[in-house]
Image 1 (tube, one colour):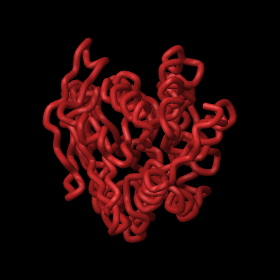
Image 2 (cartoon, rainbow, N blue to C red):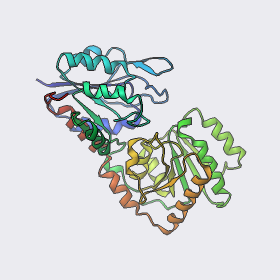
Image 3 (cartoon, rainbow, N blue to C red):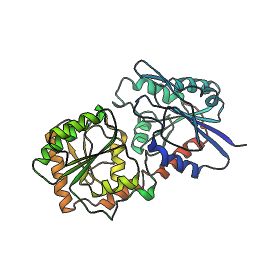
Image 4 (tube, rainbow, N blue to C red):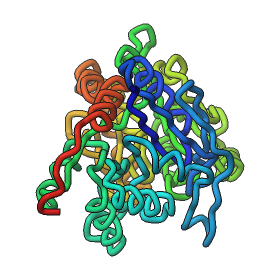
Amino acid sequence: MARDIVVLQPAMASYRQAFLDAVDKQLPNDVKLAFHVGDAHFVSTVVTGVQSRLISSTGANRYVAGRRIGWQRGVTRAAIVADCCVVELNPRNINTWVVLIGRRLLRKRTLCWGHAWPRRGPASRSDRLRKVIRHLASGIIVYTQRQQQEIQEVEPAVRVFVAPNALYPARQLRPTVSVEPKKTFVWIGRLVDEKNPLLALAAFRRLAARHGDLHLDIVGAGPLRDGLEEAVQSYGLSHMVTFWGHESDPAVLGPLFSQAVASVCSGYVGLNVTQSLGFGCPVIWALDPLNAPEVCTLDQSNGYIYARGDAESLAAAMDSALEDHASRRIDRDEVSARVRNTYSAEAMSAGFLSAVLATERPRSGR
């Protein structure tokens, strides 16, 4: 009889497509796996955009209190009866509490999947709730080995698995050798306040005053686009800035990153880091308490640090990247290989399946 595994996700954005494809290919024949997916996440700009035979759509989620608390409809029965269930590691998700408590009473295996700590880190007051969740669960799935080590150091009783947060198959993570290097920078992400694209534009304006042959590619969609386009026009930079809108196709992004001097993170670091590094493009970034765990991939060999929120400091870092680009100081093949070996869709799928197919361990000491 096939093992029945259910995964609850409020939303799965288009960047999870390669992961789902890899899971489908690696899934054992004796396992029945279903991702029960809603329409949009707590962050309203994160919407479902994947297609797979493994997806079971649950329609519109319910959110209250300014989208701070949410509920995915019609999933409780499937989640409770499954042999193994995976819920979101998020205390604001009511499904997480209902399923964890119900399955704990039934002595059934339940995993939580997500970031190990709240956005503001393990010292955040909200981690008290996450700690309860971690100990109610049979285990948790996190995105980096560093997060795994951090949890095991402070909570050795918690079983921790790693599914590296990935966007593309390994074969697509490499520099595009057919493109010529240019004096361009790439900014990629949602055009929202948290990503602070206006800071990148302000820094680029300063740099353009010193270098007249630069270009900035802005890749992403969001509510700030109109304001950014107006700012570009008012700065007289329309001939130096291109808005690409939302784009996730590696056939398009690969050449953009491969020809660029660097990618610019003007807000917190997220998946855009492994995306950029995977194509061999160094990253300009700032120390920020909101940085996602993928920040652990950055060091002096593949990135440049600036003072958070400081346009002049960011412009100086971009200037340093220009100098290194001319001298070819950074080995782009090496930058790409490091990410390709760890943050591929295949590696993420393997880690995820290893977690959901693992056998239960006794709860002694819990």
